Image 1 (cartoon, rainbow, N blue to C red):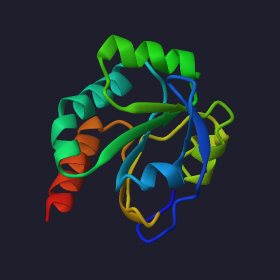
Image 2: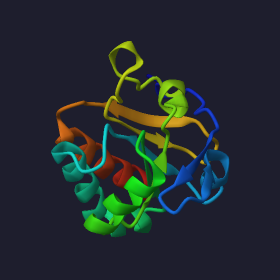
Image 3: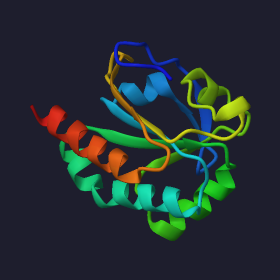
Length: 151
């Protein structure tokens, strides 16, 4: 897994609307909370996405944005986003190229580890957490990222 001080690899993936999203372009708008999750509609991933949704106004007020990545298709992401009214983009990485580049592929390259990164406008990782089953660690991480950005 990439760590604090590493440069995040640039990438381009389709989002939940089928539009292309490039990391370097996203960072032009400010720091980014980039989170990786195993699958849409699973209990843990739904809980995580909804906790991020519930903090979204605070995220924006702190000058941050959130983007999620998992292997599901753009269409599946759109269904997930719509059902849970998620106000942030979800990116599709079906080939797991970005997942591997960030070092969050599961054992034997299968699956995805639950990881969240705070990436500065310069593309440098400022903070990171990996906690596959402790969803509350990602919510705590987001709270810390909000506080850090307000300082």
